Image (cartoon, rainbow, N blue to C red):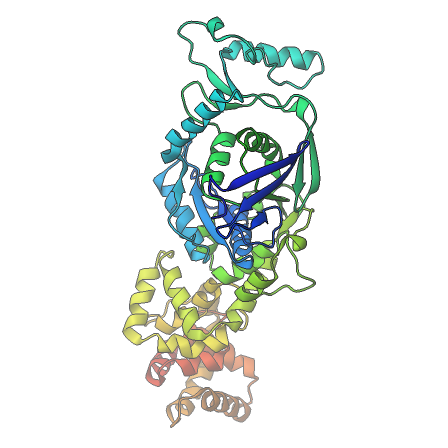
Length: 505
């Protein structure tokens, strides 16, 4: 099995890493070749919601695994016990499931693996690749200040690197540091950033186990990725320095190094670092704002990846076309207006019954959602389905559909908006009173019949269409703006529409 601990051989040329694994058939596989299948992972910290950048990282890893016929895993990096919460874990898992990015198998929880992390640290100590450091916080701070004053990088000076255990002070719990390379370079052959070089002199002996016995991020990530068989690590470019440090851990353990790809971060539409004012919200917020999961997924895939000039992708197209070659080096820009436009396209293409199922889910996020659902259950969702073709043409979010269809289940007498109430003056009521007999006489209650009756009446009475249609919209919906008035009237049962008209008159 690729990634198993007993089947791995690592070949190094200087500090450049080339990794090989042996398959069950005995064939050597170059894991730096991205065409041989993949095990990817998404590894969020459960200290908050699944933000938009994390969702994109998850999507890219999901697509890469699917494209290469591999496996996509989820690891919850919950070692920060003070900030990790069950609520955050649930929000992350729910967000991934809503986007259709659920992992292949149960998630791994990093905190539960601390004994394994300790085991690897003990192995590094035994092999002479790590050592105990007894520096106090005050010594470390003095070290940084001296380096800064001398114009040197503020890094650890290695003072405990080669000292004898007998020199250890009594009663001081040591931190464990990796004995990193001090000369030469660590080179990352990155699938997005190309060749990235780090001078080893600037990468000090990082702590891999704190004095309280907890593993540090870089150590835990390497151990977990190795044990999970991860072959491809795709993450944000802000992890590049971490990658250089992690590669040194891989080398010390003689473990295979994954294929690395570091994608640029997401910025706001103005080019500034993405923040809440740009839309850097949790995935659950976009669900509550009425975005479709497939539309959000389509929008996210285009943030840093392209396939020619194509903008709209089916899931199958994303899977078949996604690859490293489409990933760019420039920061992507998140634009809510573009997301809304794309969401509108998805709404127009979606089957009406399917849209209604999404609306039912969204009702759970609305203050009056339960009441709306109850009224639709009473009158039948087929009324909404009948109206859907008319209201989805201009909709950009599911909220637009809800807002433009509320009148279908509004209870009489309607509550008019301020502008609608002002429009229903005595002259308008007289015009509506003249129209009422034409409606009452209709034997068919269809959009075509309703429109013909209104147009015949305005022509015969000498009114412009708007003089009748505007107060009629107010009487039927309680608003000044709604779906096309002919569809709005005909979607209601005839007697319901007539009674609303009579109420207004």
